[in-house]
Image (tube, rainbow, N blue to C red; front, side):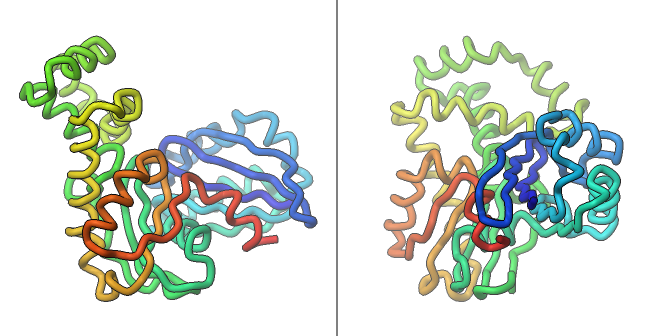
Length: 279
């Protein structure tokens, strides 16, 4: 059997298939970003899904796509953990950006982006990732990501830029204070994930003009500042992967159309799309 995984900092989606492309099971486990977690945590985050782990002796190949795996030290750490848990399987580890490219563009060239907890992009020639703007962390980049939108919501809340009704709803749902925010951002691990935890508020209050304007602002910023930095942005399709892109695709497509660009495929999770690639 073959196991394919899409691993982020927050969670990992797994899909198990046989040689006939039949899906045996779908699973979720904890995040597997090797730049964030130590070996013990990585092991626990995988093994705590008992249903999936019970199949370990029968798995012969694992294709894991994840964030943070471009760093050699992080790659080796995750590879060691996987080999220890799935000792009968061949392990293959690739970047989450390559997963997004293979799942959306297939074998055709395109500009591929991830809009989830964080954001990133790359130029894909139909076979490999050729060029990327480069990722410099959530403080300098991550426009239109979950943590970017979360930061905007917090700023608008404390600066009282939200409409009165939205402000009251945000206050009621999160009950945060400046002190609690400072603690989570500067004293606890994974501040980017903390910021992204406020993004679901946009889906819950999607009908608000304030939310729609915020979405348009974020997508406009991502496209004009990041995607337009690629040489062929006007002639290649723009593909997107991730929960933010998928849930708010209407606003994303509106901004793409605004600049007369070519819209490509927009998906939430690449795992099922990757079955045809590996089986």
